[in-house]
Amino acid sequence: MARRPAYTTLTLGQKEALCAKADSEPSMTQTQLAKWATDEFESPVGRSTVGGILKRKAEFVDVPEPLQQRKRHCSDNVRAADGLLLQEIAEYKAWHDNGSINGVTVRSMAWDTVGGDTAPSRGWLYRFQQRTGLWFAVRHGEGGSADMSVVEEGKKKLKELVSSYRPQDVFNMDETSFFYRREPRGTLTTDKKEKGKKQSKLRVTVCVGTNSDGTEKLPLHFVGKAKKPRPFKNHNVFEETGATYTNTPKAWMNTVKFCEWLSDLNEAMRLQQRHVLLLVDNVSSHDEAGGQLSNVRLEKLPPNTTAVLQPMDQGIIKSLKDHCQTTKTAAHLKDFRAGKKYVPVDLLTAIKWCAQGWREVSAKTIRNCWCHTGYISKMDVRFLLN
Image 1 (tube, rainbow, N blue to C red):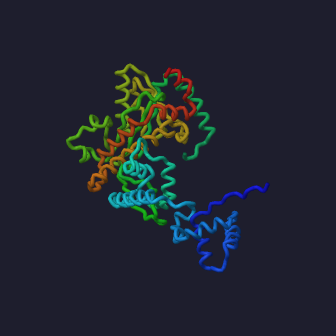
Image 2 (cartoon, rainbow, N blue to C red):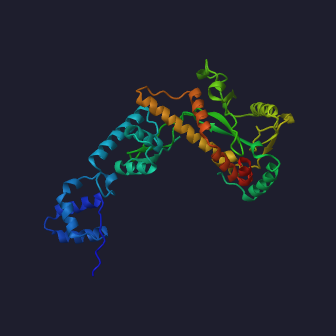
Image 3 (cartoon, rainbow, N blue to C red):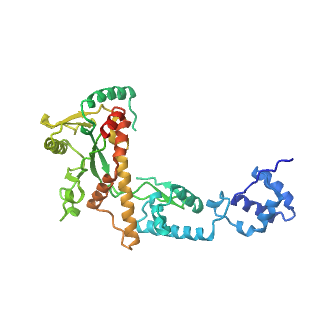
């Protein structure tokens, strides 16, 4: 018994080409068109398939380029929903002064429109992009390498060092820049050439620190330029956010401010009757405050190894910024839908977003990032948790 040939489904673009061929050469029979399509598309196409396509050739006229590779048209309901969502995306970009839109924003928009128990998945977003031609464009405009022999040597020394402390008494702190008005470089767009947007250079430094088992997150410490930023008027930053704030001329952490922060940490540990180890990277501002620390032992990581050995760099800071971006997106969407005028975020609101993001960084994420460095044992953490 002869084997039935494999069934072939042509793309919308191929169906359009087949209909165009039939119109340009009306003398060709369906059998001849089937042979032409088989050769042209390098896939078996039967005469009945050709006949079915030609009966509905009105559907395959001027197929938009983003849909050329699809095999089926969307239903009217799906097209209508996609159109409404695209319109809202365009309105949001205009409201946000040509701001960037990422997948999280689009999925949040769709969730509010469609409803349901959970937000649309990444798979839904992919299919939505395929249907509409929405794609991710990087806006152009405005783990360094590490010597692994040095890393391994540093890892051995750190392993021996941390073994003298309980996991909850081993801390790491790192500073990171927080450009609180900056947009993502990429955006979802239907344009092949997305115009760039000048990025804000407003920045503060954020000090991020945790212990190795994830049971304690140090309060975020912000370093800005202004001694008393205008948005702070009539507000108590620590009471409202749990974060602390100080200032330097360039909004960078310097030795004086680091010693002040370190002294506060030492006092907090003295009151708790704890002796802790604090690991920091090897920069000049990380000074030991003249050796006046009674409850904090300060140790610097080996030079040029922080990309591998610093726990904050293994994903903790990234997790913080991701959660902060999610909070920012939700706030922008809320204002957009409420019909409010777009207003660039002020420093106090940005600190609140960051503090909210910090609360959402999980202990599991923190533990995994510490264990990823290789000098904190998973067994130590499990023993403590048990």
